Image 1 (cartoon, rainbow, N blue to C red):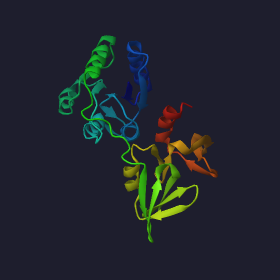
Image 2 (tube, rainbow, N blue to C red):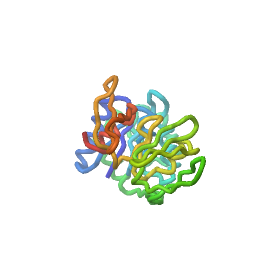
Image 3 (tube, rainbow, N blue to C red):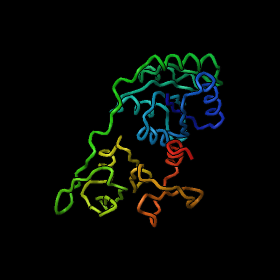
Length: 239
């Protein structure tokens, strides 16, 4: 079971994580401290449930819940974990399975987990629909196997697809390619880069205590990683 905890208070996340782990040590927990970081995780990781605080630094937990409810791959159970009673009615509008108050009590978290485990996702999770992609260049249409693609970069309003053998400039935007490559082992690690996670060779320290990555066959190229993707990559690659 894979759960997401969204709370801007580190102590609250740690407390909730502890209570969940007491109930089930095998639960895998991802953490987010803002609406933006939570939405980033939702785009990249298949989850089984989420505990969401209502008030966050960059918005409201309802925004995250609404994104969960409208996921093409199907909604999953939501529990609101907050210090505010006044949002309880809002929780019903997104079909939350429970509403627990801070400070957390073990019996409340146990009840929420039981309810969460009884609810199955509305739809089956989407898998990668194909192992090929067509890249429309100015001259022709090139069909690539996905495993050939190492990374994609933005170029003005277009994109450049980089493989070990060649580069292809396509009229497709990076946003459009991100949609096409969703659920196929690719991640948009920075605003201007989509990478094939199967091609990652190493992570290196980067500017301002950040990280960069190198890909197989591109040893001279360092791809910067945005701060809101570092935690997600650490979960995936366990570093």
